[in-house]
Length: 163
Ligand SMILES: [Zn+2]
Image 1 (cartoon, rainbow, N blue to C red):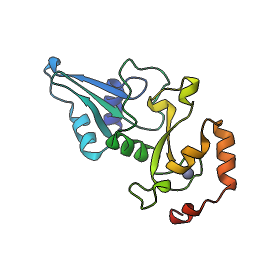
Image 2: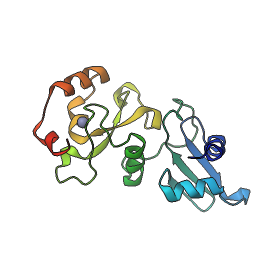
Image 3: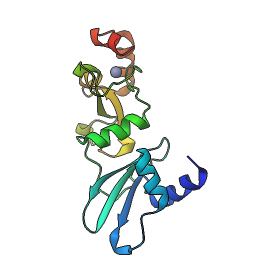
């Protein structure tokens, strides 16, 4: 990404990388945003007649809790795809590839809460990381380091299908 584009988007995004764009301003959508929408780097996740909210995911662009906008739904397929791109298609627990639409559900991506929901963890980008459905389930609410150590010692049957 060109540095000018990065700067333009950083000026629009809040701490969590969320961008609010109101139609009432009657200004055209910034060209940078249009280009990144086309390239899949920015994902619109809320839209109404008057306003749209975009998710911009880039390493290091999130600051926990610095957003007044609603968090993107973690059950949205396009949103999940955006996180998979951000995390380079790697499960943060076992470090193997996640494969969208893999024939085995275990190998497909899901969103893991770094701070579990039961401990007050949010659905904002700073608290989410891509994990295999199976690794996510196996972690339950274990601390991240414990879950990672455990996954590095396990070799479940499905993992050879993503190696
Ligand atoms: Zn995994």
